[in-house]
Length: 442
Image (cartoon, rainbow, N blue to C red):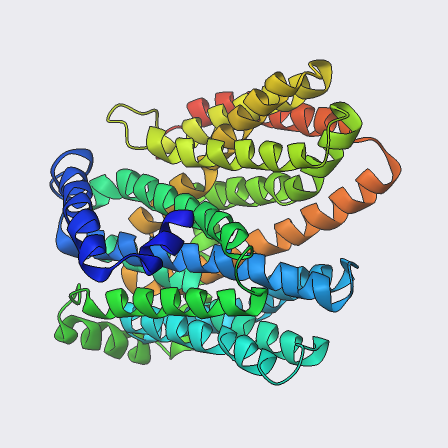
């Protein structure tokens, strides 16, 4: 935030003298205490650091883009909405070929190339701003280009995790990834908010581009997880099996042949359906339920995403329930929170309940990804993740469209009540079924 601004103004020797020992102390604590001995190995720490920096840059970029689009239309949010639709629909359209690419190329090199492309492309915006105010056309072209090439980032990163982490440590690894991702993404907008006081919005993209470049460098420096011979053998086996399209067909069949994968994918889709409309709910809660000023909206939003951050910390525990029951318990907690919010229209209670809702829903994505990483063969994991994330995005679009239609006609209190009832009913119905069919879902 402001610390990064002050760091740039401080003398170099003073900055190194202060931040050097502090950084060494933090990394030493992470590697020696908070991370297990297995996860404290350099490749995973590098992967985690690269992801956190990338998410920080993404958060700063989205904030800058929103402000630029808002100013282009002189206070009209329509262009902001168009950018949001592009960044959801375009990746959905290209996720399947992106999954093929993830399993074809070295994943760390692919992640580095994609981050470099994003950083360089977004940095074109301040260059254009040097000659004239940024226009709608060039901005949308850049957004579309980055959306196309960003589609492979999620599958490539999540498919690379089991190459560095043993199977029995994946839950903790994904907990750390959630902490790093949420923390980085939250710090990005906060830093942008401070920097906007001193710099025009397009110039924030220079800093974000530098962050993407640093992330790319870290991905390149990570040691390759598998010998090249093993990768060549996996590609040769895929060629003998009928090519990449046949490999994707087999991957899709794997989803329907495995009850656990099918059920885990269903939970991921359910999470997307409930989580996606929440950004529309926060401002309506502030005005309709709490009759608070617009600034309270930011506090509600922050509480929800702080809950997601804390959810990652809980995943670092050593004695946790099984992944599927834990996801359902989280949905039970979120459902109760949603039901209580309209009945306790007190600002403090609303913030606390939203934190609990964010915490409960936060376990779905990392724990489902853990099961995917444990079950799906590594040479097919990119394709499988692209298929699962396509369904995830489809559910998110449905949640946003359905939420928009509902909230246009009915109050937010009824929306929260309906969501709470559905989450509670789902959790209470599925928990006994999970127990009954435990052998098939393990």
